[in-house]
Amino acid sequence: MIKALIVLILAAIVVSLGSGLLHLVKGEAGSKRVANALTVRVALSVLLFVLLFVAWKAGLITPNQ
Image (tube, rainbow, N blue to C red; front, side):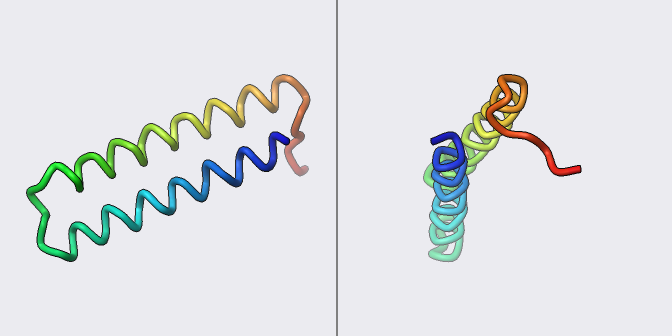
């Protein structure tokens, strides 16, 4: 369950990255869509980091050694 959630968040980060790139290439560099895509990507990255840390502390995932 937790691994599926991690993969889902990673996929959402990649989609947000692609969305920002699409708007940037279209010439909408000054638009709010590029900034929104960056905001979403940063928020998802922070969420992923917190989720990984909590899952590690709870013993749901273990780091490779």
